[in-house]
Image 1 (cartoon, rainbow, N blue to C red):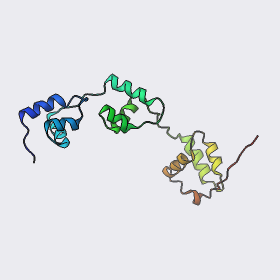
Image 2 (cartoon, rainbow, N blue to C red):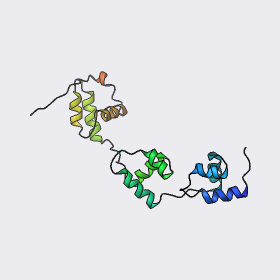
Image 3 (cartoon, rainbow, N blue to C red):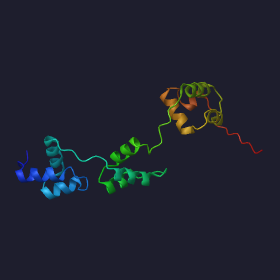
Length: 161
């Protein structure tokens, strides 16, 4: 077990820890403790870091503008983890919702996937908006078996009209 905390260290922790403009690593350096020690003491004291400000959320909105985003890079800028950035972006509606499979799509997939000689393109065309990779993943989830066992014919139909 490490050294006991002094009253001065505890006071400094109470002052610095809630302020998100100071990283936990900086708090640890200022108090001359490890990051793990600072986090453990803060937890025991019931200290929490301030939540997301409107400015932070506005910054996320500007950075997300409908394209792939580096969560870790944004996290460093906001002194948060990439996981926290992604979670907040999802919560405030900046991420595309997960496109869940409908029962009808699962039925179509099962019928075509298990039918011997079905061309890959026929399955993709029967499930608009689904990629071949997502179709394969869903087939695995539904335990439909491998493509080889199902007798797939990998042919492509091109319409040059």
